[in-house]
Length: 272
Image (spheres, one colour):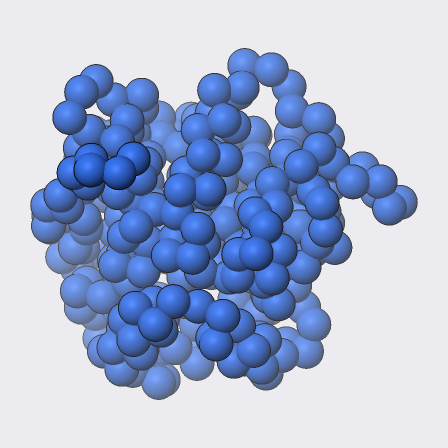
């Protein structure tokens, strides 16, 4: 709300998986509604989710890690999606986080989904923001759609992303891109027991309505929310709307969400 002070992020370090994992930790002024762990997209860092993290931290403890090789978590090795998920789980265990809501963005959706499938007792709910890599055109197609999306994003996200990409290095970004393009998220989500929320922006060229519905259909319990006029970078592009969708989803977690339906029928909230 206007005039409210945003929670300030505290930089933390956790030794896990042979590296020192950097994270941003935000705490609400009052009682927490439960911890939220956020996972950034390919090539970028925890900073890319900063505005959304601040919104959620009004009533949640929020942890946003720099995955190995990205942001301030230095690593000479190039980590697979599965290995990144394992080190994130180790960080959560070492920090005593308990059951969390996992929020992944873009490639972070893959990392979060693998973690949720491997450690079902860890995850209260899984939120997939702008899940990408729908198989159209492989890695090259992903790059083209990202280029189409860039002019629609806030300059602060584009500038921060450019710095993050330079820091990560082209070999790491390309290797992760190739691997992620070959990982079928709609198949990974089948093994997730937690309820799933898929959030996409109506202008997002990387996350189409068809792809969102395909993921939701394969999940055991799923809901889709479309944010009007938003593009791919929901953490910067529409943080209040995204936070509102996540809060509403968590508030209704005790009620079985309406399932996404094949054959052209749209789940509640999917207006695309």
